[in-house]
Image (cartoon, rainbow, N blue to C red; front, side):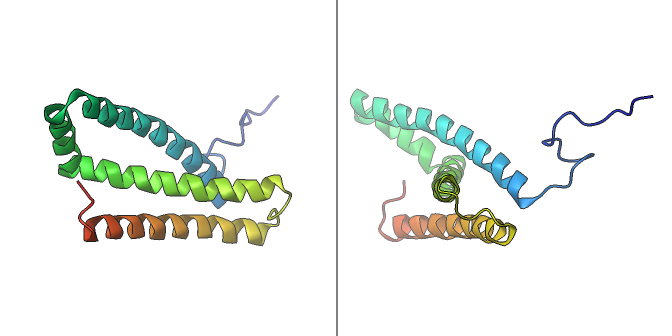
Length: 132
């Protein structure tokens, strides 16, 4: 009699307890998807610029709306998270930081640095009048 066992260690929930390593891996993939979609928005901005002031005014109004601003903040957080987690992966590629305490410290550092740098970018953008 064979027991039904999970096929993959990525089945978080009923079989596996979420850990920082698994959650950060999922988050890295999710932020990559958001960045890919955000690049389409960047293309939209650039195309509207080439089409003239009226087309760009429409895009700017969309980005200045509450939903647009939220999308820009989320995009910037994703950019920062992907950047810092990518640096973390570069250290791993060099064989450094694999011991469990360092994995946890670097994971928390990625999250904190992402939040702080996103806040700093938006503080600078708003305080200098550069936000839409």
